[in-house]
Length: 133
Image (tube, rainbow, N blue to C red; front, top):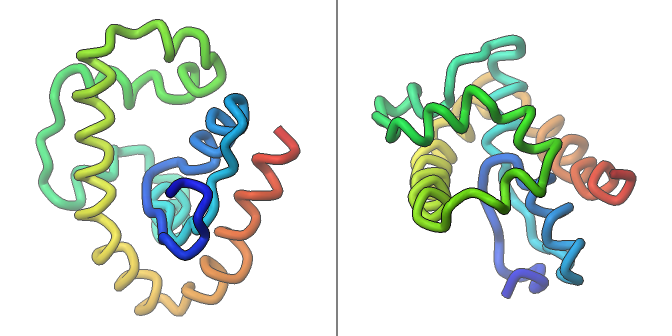
């Protein structure tokens, strides 16, 4: 399923997921929408959590994760050592927030005429950057 390009994938920071999956021999294919990239195109420089766009009150553990996101992404070992319960909660929240954000961000990209940049440059570039990293 993850390697099937016919099954579209959406998420948050999918480049990181690509890198982690590659480390175990899985090539993520069919990436369609990344909320981090869409949000950046629409609000470059904005640092507040994307979940605020939908009024989603994330758990305290997720707020802590967002504050330390850059450091955590640079240290896969630290991320994988987190307790599985906290990981499940965070992963479930990320998935839910991403699914709720996609229509809002897609509409924003369309309205701002940024769809071609997003679809033709930014999303395909994730694959290249994941390969480089």
